[in-house]
Amino acid sequence: MKRYLKVFLVIFLFVTIFLVGCENELEALSVPESQVPTITILAYHRIIDNGPSFIDISTSTFENHLQWLKATQYNVIDFNTFTGFLEGKNTLPEKPVLITFDDGYKETLTNAAPILAKYNLPATLFIYSERIKNSPSPGGLTVSELQELQKLGWSIQAHTISHADLSQFSRSNKSGAVWEMKDNKERLEKLLGTPVTGLAYPYGAYTDEIESWAKEVGFTSCFLIEEGPNTLTPNPYRLKRHMLYAKDTLEDFARKVASAPLNVTRTVPSQAQVINYRPVKVIADVELPPELNVIEVYADLENQVLDAKFDQQKQRIVVETPDLGYGHHNLTIKILGSDKRTYTYGWSFVCR
Image 1 (tube, rainbow, N blue to C red):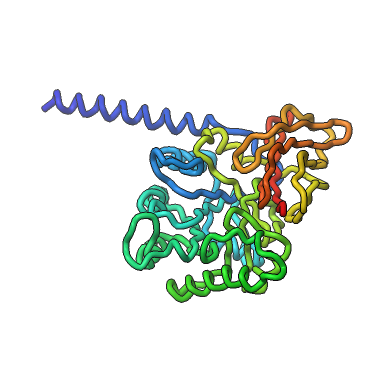
Image 2: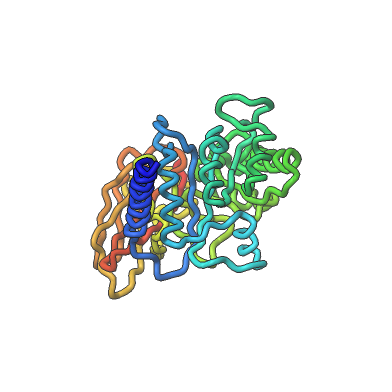
């Protein structure tokens, strides 16, 4: 009996040391946080092991994300707390983070939800109507499954009917764009019995007209995948979100969460602009603190790394955009400053 007790104690001690070591490792992976208070919104799609897509995140990676947030004292908030803040009804805790999922994969319920429940954390799902199934089937979620997510503290919000690229709707086809947004909103409200006030644009694609039509439909907040943190006075119809990719390391994740807003005074093309050409270069004029030096500059276009250069004299970032096709584009620029902080700004435009 004593022998078995010894073995048990040795195993218990080993596991304890291992767990403490993992927690210390997560705490040690701290990156300099933004000096400006921000609201971080994370955008996930599918939580699955060995997934085929560049937006598929493994279950262990996702859990590491949550553990890192806890270890570094970020506060995960629910959708109602966030929108209540936007409406001036309540305040937010320090270092707030909103966790969101797009589309409505089956694994949202089977893989993501149990991990979030383990840490007693809420999330928001933006689902498009064609993902809602009448009976259990691979890929989508049934109404009862959406209700199960609601019981776990999830909010279910809109993502259009067919996951349409709304930026492709011209001014002459307002009715088509409005139908995509309104029918999805009303169907979710009818099926689930809860208000739907938030819309995530599929592909993050929108124009000035789409934004105004979303307001007409009754949305009070719209979510992009333009990279970057939100300040405490965000535009509720242009809420930035950090996309998570399969290639991201834990340090990449940490730098996204802790990133500081990059003060951009002008971009060419400008945000949400519709242009009739394909630019070979994109420009962003920035305004940096006088004491900050640029160590490195980065740029990417929907997960594709681009060549970027910083002109110190002009305070300008120039990004080479070879083979830029027609359609909607999300572009991100990042600066690693001499203070070791990452400064991030994302915007989008449409080529027609």
